[in-house]
Each structure stands twice: as C-alpha cells, then as structure tokens.
Image (cartoon, rainbow, N blue to C red; front, side, top):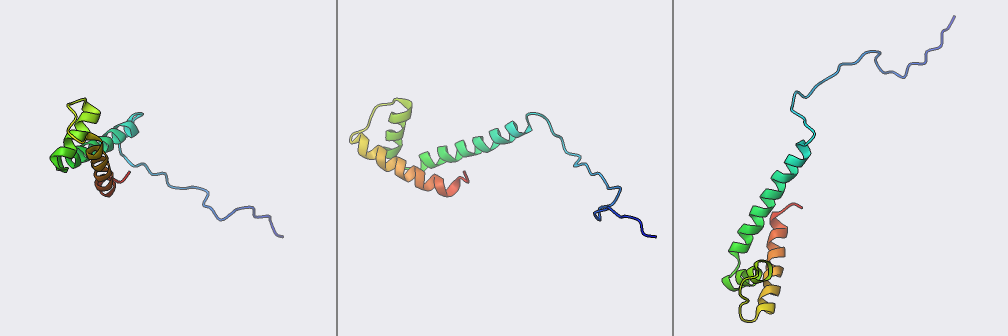
Length: 92
C-alpha cells in the first residue's frame, strides 16, 4: 500500500545560526551618523580645495560673511564646482 507523502523536500529540522554581533535599537542611527559625518568632512575638504574667491562666495551665502565682488557669478561657479567634485567623491 502507498501512503501519501506531502513533504516538500525540506528537512524536518534545521540549524539555527546567530551572527554573534551586537544589535541594538539605534544601530542603524549610529551607522547613518558615521556615514553622514564622513560626507560632511568630504564636502568641507572640497570647499577648502576651491579657489579663494569661490570659498568666500560660499561662506557669504551660508555663513553670512562679507560678500565678495561679483558675488553671484562666483557663487554659481562655486556651487557648480562643488556639485561636480562631490558627486565623484560621495556615494549618495
């Protein structure tokens, strides 16, 4: 006589594994903060690598320092250069 076999081919018992790593409720937040601080350091380094007049335009825009002569043009160039360079360095 035949008996019905409804098994799908999976073992009746399996091995459970644990990573052994630490996991807490804020582990993702800590990882995100680490990545963001790296990105901030990268952007800061890129700003310091720009020509002096473009640095001054960025500082005037975001830190309310004195605006350099031809501020709008220098700011536009600075933002364009900043986006180009940071786009290559930051994997956002």
